[in-house]
Image (spheres, helix red, strand yellow):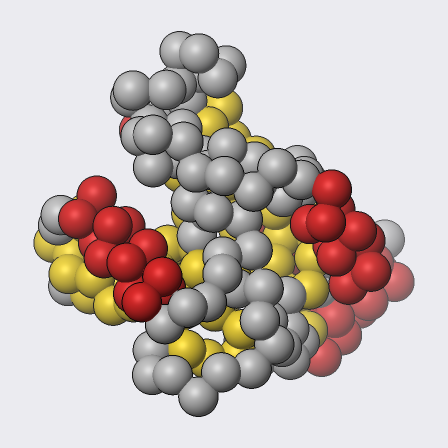
Length: 189
């Protein structure tokens, strides 16, 4: 998806947050690759215990309050990219502004390629979808990097909005070594 397509989609969407805090609208990235390179985001570090966020809802509210206090605007209210870790993770919230001198803001690296998969189901069943997405990335000769999740529904609104939905986003970079290995393997066939 190009930057112009992302911008056109952003301008046509209803920009509200539901009462439960979930995004009322989110990018229409069902499957495929996008580039968020250069996108300004609010970066919030969050504590984790074995990849499980501690006080996730409180940090969602903290991020929302920080953005409002800075008089900035979320690109898709309630939508963020959450990266987990053993003890610490981060939440990235895309903003509509292009630049700001405020702290906790950063521009994503350019390019910032993401492979997208819209997952329907419980978090416990997500492992298979993540492995499949990673295999696809490797089969394309690309090196998978960090995994981001975006929870599109919560227990309060999931029944009204079509069940549990999580957007899986795997960042990838081009790899000349992998590409060469794939070419070599394909030439032997």
